[in-house]
Length: 209
Image 1 (cartoon, one colour):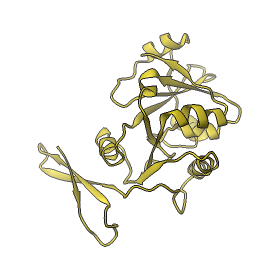
Image 2 (image 1 turned 135 degrees about the vertical axis):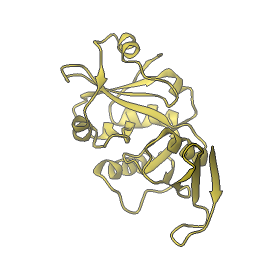
Image 3 (image 1 turned 60 degrees about the vertical axis):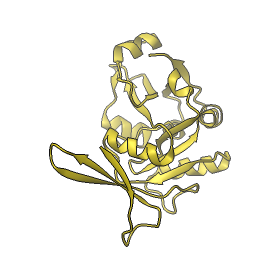
């Protein structure tokens, strides 16, 4: 059971939110912090990608809402972020072929199980698998758990193909990481597809899995 309460501590602002997850079998509470909603960039960025992301969004006049959180690791954490931003977080997977010569950033809905077989069939490519942690850090500028469409800003040689599950495109709002595991954003899906990805020269392929 997830419970949202507003509570004041010395290091929290007036409307910051703490979520408590009741794990009855273990008889304990786990606290997860989600900040107020912001519509401006962080005062200090943690990574090169995060800094580039907010600069480009500003340059393209793409409006967003964002929150700062504890490190989001579980699906329960994402559900709590969804509640505050009133959106559905996407699931972004970094995939590659066996020879590690073809790379895909696949965006699907958070609740849909991933099938490498179905993905490969829909794309008409050989079987894919998850790319390594090292490749993610080198090519996407993120660590595990923070894969995001914004990594196309670093892919100057267009080595990564953007692929979208068509169910994602049917949503008005696009929820994703800002390149970290402690920053999450809400943006119009249409602006991600038509404005941002056009700017990065990564026209997406749409599949149904």
